[in-house]
Length: 80
Image 1 (tube, rainbow, N blue to C red):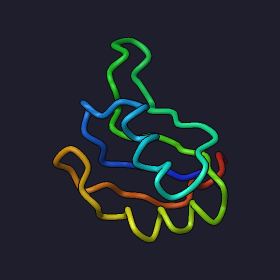
Image 2: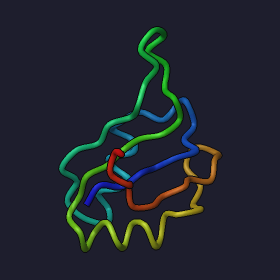
Image 3: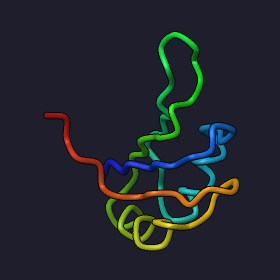
Image 4: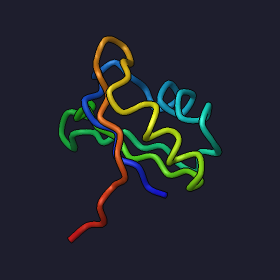
């Protein structure tokens, strides 16, 4: 399942986020979206993981605090 993780602190790195998500299941990929010109984090990411782990992560991490900010964690919608 592909998960959207929003409202991330700009200091959060991919390996930090992957570590948090790995507590709930096997993480296939973790990608923090960055600005093309400045390479700075845009404050959101997409994480792919197994369905059972993803459901648990969404239920437990939505609204949870990471690096001082409450994360938004939900199933990612496919591109239109």
